[in-house]
Image 1 (cartoon, rainbow, N blue to C red):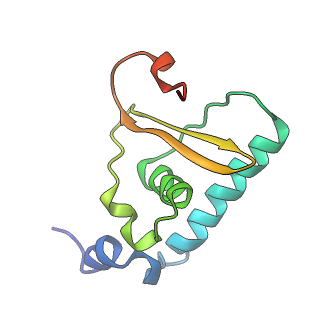
Image 2 (image 1 turned 30 degrees about the vertical axis):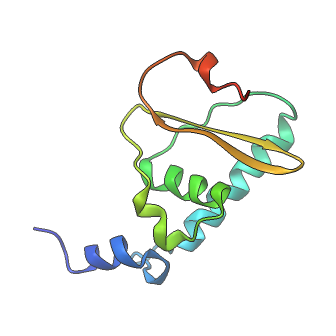
Length: 109
């Protein structure tokens, strides 16, 4: 049985804070800051980051300019690949929830 808070987490995550924990907005900020830090330490390189589904969805939502309240519409499956290219003109989402094919397919055209 799902807890009553589940509905808020699904419909309005920006309004939810886990007990003694962080809010979804704080988690998204933490994820984006971590990605920015990794990017600054590896300029021009390809890096791999591994996380749980919700933080990945939060990073994708941020890259796409989508409000955190809509991030539950993004699907991230176990062991899937999501690729985001960052440049001086901003992020480009190359693929989300990819579970097959070659990583070469992720190169932007």
